[in-house]
Length: 358
Length: 261
Image (cartoon, rainbow over all chains, first blue to last red; front, side):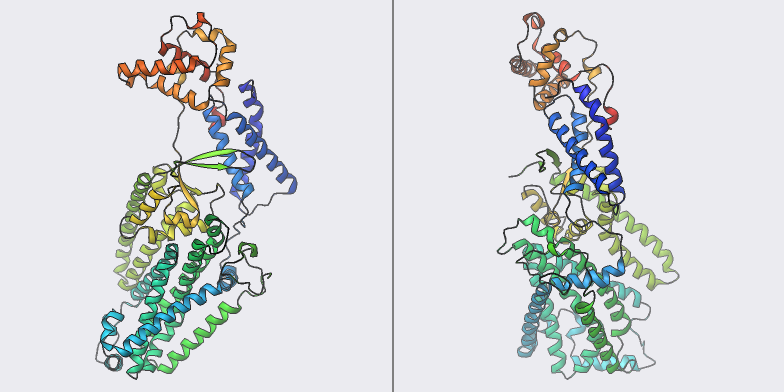
């Protein structure tokens, strides 16, 4: 028990001030590492201040001092008990070439699930169009897709080939069209990821409905004998855009699985804490891919023969796809990642990548 | 169970508390932020209107990108820069903190801000508001996913006790052991109730005032053995004023404000 409160405060004030000073230093420089002696001192100061708070808690007369000590102990508690890796200096290249593909590979099963959901949707959409072409307005709620594929191809090629016509629909609005695509697709991706919080129901619906549209469009054009146009039109941006949405779906499913927590005894908060960083990494990666896809869609995809030969566009799309697959499967292998391997829990959808211990 | 206080118990056995912010306060803070975003977006589009004279396409593109980045980035940037506060939250004295008292991390900030997309469904943060209202720690979906809570950090100014209590004779001061015993036995909550009663005495209805002080005085009389000569002839209100005086005003010189500041 404290007999003389004033003397107690006077004698302990130096300890509190020292702790506050050290906290200030630690919080200011995120990369600062304390030598072991200072670390011990810091811990000692924290324990003493915590004990002072416990003693002072029984006192009715020092609300200000108590609040001050509570703040101090709370800050020191955050520093001492934080086990997550400290933020390093921002290294965009390292993040892009190492962290992003490593994170993607660590949750590859969630990605496969995302692909599977989209494929089921695509099969559904394709079959629906094949058996009931009248369902087109429901499957593809976009005016330019409702046209007969052969008519559209003829019109696109005529417009581009005719020197007297207002040749380029996008003249004077390529940049804004590109920006519109980037923001819209990024919004859809964020939404796909965020809906993982609905235990994956929302994410599944978005992936499935995306699949329906892709499948319906593909079957519609193939049936009309316009496969080449379709590939030339979709591949240059689609090989980046579609995987980007699939990765967003992967992030959504990771979040959903953390929410559900099948067969795990870890509390919800801890499960979410484990995946939080990976979600952010994936969604930033998706945004990067969509910026690229937005450029390509506005500046390349909308140009058809005779302006650009279809073979060239298809070839370009295939090169992009190869690079993307190589990037996601190979980049950052054998390099230690930013995310500690022990952050990935047993029983989650994560599988170990090459650089992690089994 | 719904609570308005976040209690964090450290492994050392120390408990510290944070006041959780309610749905309405948070909505008001969001309104302030929404207005600021609107203002920033208007300024941005004004700037791009000027650029539009030179290159309308580029201006429109930058405008769309600017709006998108601002509407998503505002929360992330402010909460990262100001340790869990946006301008609206500063205004309403709110702060985002880690739900377990640990350091707020960048990915938590991004997660909670990206999940606004779901929380704001279908309009005016209906989903977020309902979740916040139902959740024990008043968390919207973004907070649950990011493991954060929003706390209130009200500025509590210490009452000017010298103004309130000084200048009057206090019969209890003649008995130092009585003062020490009261400080030892009266809990912080009891002392706070007595102080509030004394401070607000002029706002009570006369009958309620008499009744309240009678009840409080009876309670505090049981806390220690008061010598008859110290309490004889003292009205209940006067007695309570004296008790508050000896509990709170323990010293003569100004003291720990500098520490607590």
